[in-house]
Amino acid sequence: MDARLPVRAFFTDRYGGVSAKPFDQLNLAEHVGDDPSAVAANRKVVEERAGGTVVFMRPQHGTKVAVLGDDYLDGREPPEADALITTVPGLALATLAADCVPLLIHDGLSGAVAAVHIGREGLRRGIVDTAVAALIDLRRGWRHEEMITASIGPAICGHCYEVSGELRAGVTKFHPTAAATTSWGSPALDLPGAVAERLAELGMTNVFRHRYCTFEDSNLFSYRRDKVTGRQAGVVLCEART
Ligand SMILES: [Zn+2]
Image (cartoon, rainbow, N blue to C red; front, side, top):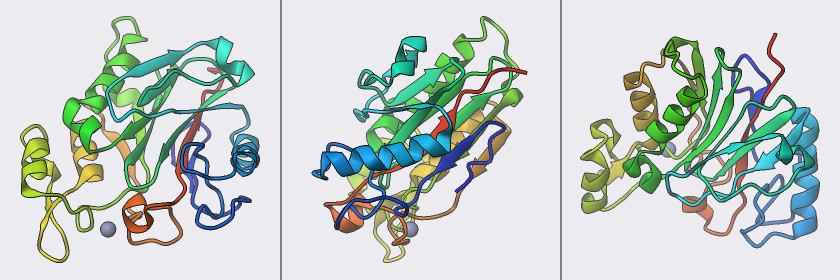
């Protein structure tokens, strides 16, 4: 699905790949137990669609940001990080998730793009702030946050993401808007809602949000629902500045 950014950017679902059950079909993660040759073939499909060299994130559920230079155009593995940023035309960044929030960002001022992975821990520890700060850093002093566009991909919604009351309190202390209740009445977290709210607080007015819930929609991978499953991607291509 189109991420609706001014550059080539999209979110994948589970279709169009070669992986066998339970990773069917377009699993893009290597660490989940899928056949590595199937993952490689699936990544090739995504790379063709991206129109550049795709670097697939290795998320750590932390707040580490990696800025990638042109030495990654050869397709080498990135360092472990939950946010990848680049200003290199022809380099595409992919964040992987199956319930966590995939966030793609484009900065119209610097031409930089970012792919971010936001789970409960990353949100609590401030990955959204860290990633946006690193993006702003590349501008050498310019502000104009309104020139940044962001796209929030499919993630588990606040009606489905059940957590203990204690875990909920730990996150809502920093992100009050993450407070949610499941459709069956227990404590929950609204991660995509909290990400949208935080981006707005940071001055970003151009934020698009896909409303698909990974847990409810069987067209998408959901770790919560299926345990052993694949990962979908959010992909953004850095294009030459015009
Ligand atoms: Zn849901």
